[in-house]
Length: 489
Image (cartoon, rainbow, N blue to C red; front, side, top):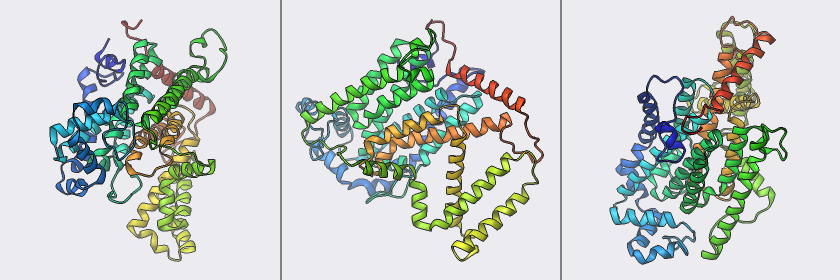
């Protein structure tokens, strides 16, 4: 068995998954470490900038955690496992986070630079795990899987979150690295992603060690931070993606589908029962522990819409509805252009787009020249991409895109009651994978001929469409059901 597969099965730290057709093992490692380096470069300024260190040096959480760690002794370790965590002013049950922060204090004291470097290295490791998940979940040729997995890492590092007092307008990952108390989110996400990799190996290869290690890693993630309570739902969705409709069925349609029948429920329901037990134990050990409050369904629905449409909402508030109308117009122009069987040179649709956008701006804003302002152009471009993403999503019926959207809904559940920027670190990782899967779908449909970019592309016949779809489906199945190694058989 290869070292990469052994790592995913839980026999050690995960290494890059094997790339079909790769000439040797070295290129496989290169792409994995490329993902790690992308994360380190994207947040390097946050880790080593004196200005950033000074900005967060007087953060109440940073100072409070360090003061409690300064007073702590070995005798406090059992207390963290039977009561509130190291920061007593914030009632949480996070024993592993308490121990890590205490060890960091013993190593670095009040020199917060050391804490920030730990956050920086953690982020690099998380980027590597996001790359491995993309390689495992994305269908297609090796080059496509590598490119889109790396794109997911890039998108994780550039995703913005809500701004708050003391938080600079920067990507979520940048802020979490600079504000080292966010390590609770990082450690929890790291072990949760690792757990998903092990679970995925179990689903694909039926290796019992994958399930065993996924459970252990999930428990470790829970003991770092409560965000991991959403993982049973994510696991159920992953089973549905890997095993198909039988995973959510109650009865087996035939003998072949029997092992997978109801697998999503078998993972999600016991996991949620364990979560309920964990939360009950937490309430006993830490009375008054902070967490989600009972609210009306309207409240949670409004928060869900707010999270899902955060980008257009912010742009509309800052610019106005005229930007939305122009973005929708441009998105439909692009959609119509790539779907036409025969079309003129690109200069003509560009002229239609510019004149149409100017006319809309003149009508709704009162000045057509506003579309030449860089800030307005950026807002229009971002909203146009958002609209195009929705169009691609509607046409997506293969690959992990819808599964990732369900995972995003699940991991937002623990944070629907809060707005702190660091709470968006978990979602940023899955948003990266989701948006990269949309790009992968467009790429594969373009190669298949259902999206035509050339100016003289002829219309694909129904027979050609069917043969292309059949070939793509066979390719997906080959990726989703890789041939087991000889040691696993």
